[in-house]
Length: 411
Ligand SMILES: NC(=O)c1ccc[n+]([C@@H]2O[C@H](COP(=O)([O-])OP(=O)(O)OC[C@H]3O[C@@H](n4cnc5c(N)ncnc54)[C@H](OP(=O)(O)O)[C@@H]3O)[C@@H](O)[C@H]2O)c1
Image 1 (cartoon, rainbow, N blue to C red):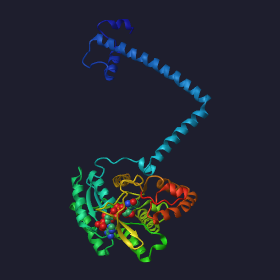
Image 2: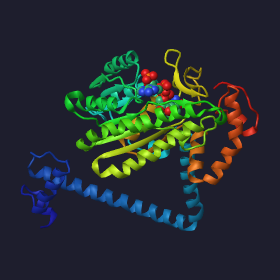
Image 3: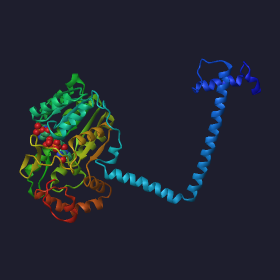
Image 4: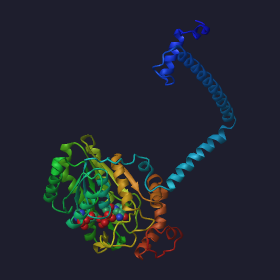
């Protein structure tokens, strides 16, 4: 029907259909049904169509122009795009405080661990305490273990104060205890929170080392392996029947960058942490289909230890409580940041993560992906780093490592 006839009181079928289209597109109110509004709507749609055609014509023109420019200059354009991408990756890497896979993973939501039962060893201070606070803030129910009950109760109170914490209990435990005691602790943990079962078992208890290789006796080496390796393995074996019967648990192993990069002054410590890598990655490959999985977290230097809560460090004489004035050091990551990144790695089910600033992170990448060069670098800077540590200086003074001056400087 010609359009002219539509100006009367009876709209044509085409106008009705256009009116319906515009109603659906939200341009015309549904209840207005008289012919004038149908006609206006029809004209509006025609306007929109016209302007759309105009716009697409312009876009087509611009696109054609861009195609021509690209055809003429595709080499410099591609090079510039690749350069920008590399620059962005480079800036990201320079600013990184963890490996790029971890930094690119999902952030923790407020209820990331809502009602999950998280059992943390070494929770009375340092990194363990921060891990407890982090999991508490994200809705977890906590089982806190270490030897010192008073400190555990202090951490428990701090966790309960956190908004979102679903509960916290103290389970004093020496991870070097005989198997029967570890078994009792595993039963108690499994029955905790009305028998909910353990969702995350975090092996954090452990101690670092500051001693030259030639100074460490076999007895001290045995103590280190007992605490850092055999303890976590024995506790895992005690808990394993419960974890397997529930069919879901993520074991988080707090290792160290010393397992990825040779660390002068920490040879045995590196050895203990590497032993954990071997055991737990094999355990994961055996039990993956039965619901027991593993995240190995490798932090670099962390600013733990205070006067009230000195760090446990193995010297050549054995385990000593050591407080170093380095809480504010820029080269060490804050325990809260490290705890958050470890929790994020577990949440994203990552197999392994590195958490460190440069140059430790850079050395980690070098040793992993270009081992010939990485190990050559470590052979060059290792003796100077060991001399720095022996003289009471920092093992991370990059200038003295590179330029060969052993500077006695605290970090
Ligand atoms: N700080 C760093 O720069 C750094 C870097 C990389 C990795 N790490 C790793 O992170 C973990 C924690 O380090 P941190 O600096 O927080 O050390 P920390 O301040 O000395 O804390 C160690 C924790 O382990 C507990 N612990 C020690 N021996 C134990 C035992 N036999 N049984 C049960 N719990 C025991 C301690 O509590 P009790 O004394 O009350 O038992 C304490 O809660 C360690 O595995 C360490 O290797 C630390």
